[in-house]
Amino acid sequence: MKTPLVVLAFMLAACGTAGSDAPAVDADLTQRQRDSILAQSRIPGAAAVGAAQRAADAVEARVRRADSIGN
Image 1 (spheres, rainbow, N blue to C red):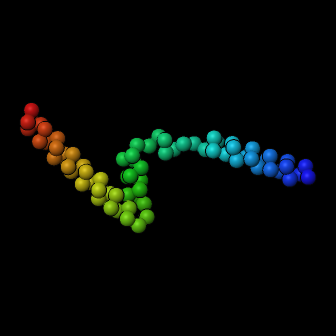
Image 2: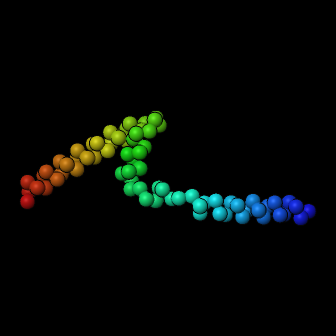
Image 3: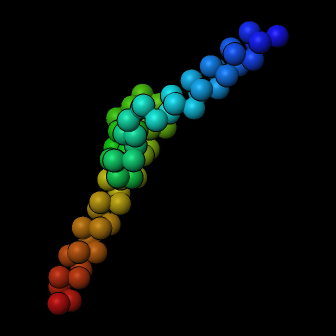
């Protein structure tokens, strides 16, 4: 009866420490960087993410030009 409990204890201990050893890469990336990585992947629909980023960049550039004219 002790053997299953010991095995269970080791399994629980291993599960508790596995996440702390892995580096948190996603925590260091901005949303734009994550979207850029996604846009370059082969996932279906990933090209739409890149197109949306380009459209957002175009709108942002247009707004900056309009703001600079107004100043």
